Structures are given as structure tokens and as C-alpha cells.
Image (cartoon, rainbow, N blue to C red):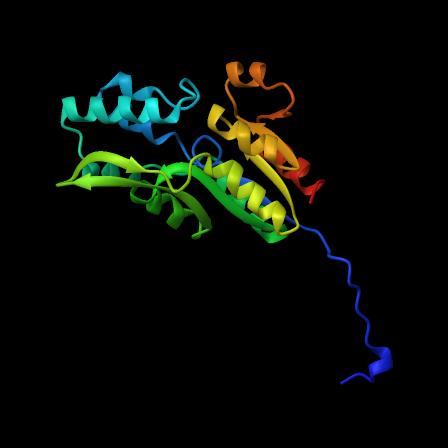
Length: 213
């Protein structure tokens, strides 16, 4: 042990960085679009890119699934066959080599496992479905506006937070973060939120994030 006079302590907190990413549209395909294509039900193509009211969107989806008899196992079967977006794994692997990453998603525990396995089990904060006899009967939010609250909580722990997402439901997270980016966002989202730089390739996103951590 060093002599007492050689010990050094800086009482000022050191701010570290952490990155929060949306999942669907950023790292993985949109689950509901894939389900729509597999089942031939075009109404299920509607996502948070089109409808910013998440509860309204989920009630709409549940109603359609009830009418068409679409069960949870059917959706899980579709998800299990989906790959990550091209380049997503290399991007995420390199980003995790440089800093800590949390995925903040409005997906559900019952949907996410196949993707988490492909990505090497990163940390995921998401919601939970209510399932009755394989039928999706409802959903339970982990927390309303959970992405924004998660970022605020990380900031309260003295983290510099850099965030990226693609949809309306990501914009409160991007606004709360110290630095926020839109990634692969549709034109209507980019136009309504010009304060967030819009990026369309992983190499550029990695460079911009790295410059801010």
C-alpha cells in the first residue's frame, strides 16, 4: 500500500458517457411490418413512424389481430426468422467496445429475445404483453415515456447520454439526451424535428457518437 502522503483523491465527480439506442428501425427490422408482410394484413404496417400516440396504435393492432386470429406464437415465429439490419451487429459491437450501450425500445419482452440473442444480449429496457391462451389481450408499459425517463435517470447518475432513434416515440428521448440523432428516420419525422441531425449510415452514426462520448 502507498504511503498516506502519496495517495491522491479528486473529490469532483467524473462524468462518463453512455449511449441509448432505439431497437426497431435502428438495429432490427420493424416487427409489425414483417408481421404484416407475412400474414398479408397491410393494416399492421402502421408503426410509430405513422402514429405518434402509442396507446392508440397498440389498441389498433390488438383489434386487427383479434379479427384475424393472429396469436403470439405466430408473431414469435415471424420474429425468429428476421435478421438484424445489414451492418447493425458490427456497429453495435464496435460501439460497445468503446462505451456502454442500453437499448430503449417500445417493443415487448415476448418479442425481443430472438434479436437480443443475435446482438449478444445487450441491456434492454422495454414493455410486456398481456397474453391469454396465446392471444395478445393487452400490454403493460414498464413506464410511460420510458425512454425519456431512462435518459433522465442516467443523467441524474452523472452520465453524458448520447441517443439515437428513428420515430416519433424516440424524440422525447433525443430531446432529453445531451446529444440526440435521428437514424434512418422517415422524411416526416426529419421535417418535424430539424433540431436532431439526421443520419442514414452506421459509419457516420458511429463517428458522430464517438465524438461526443
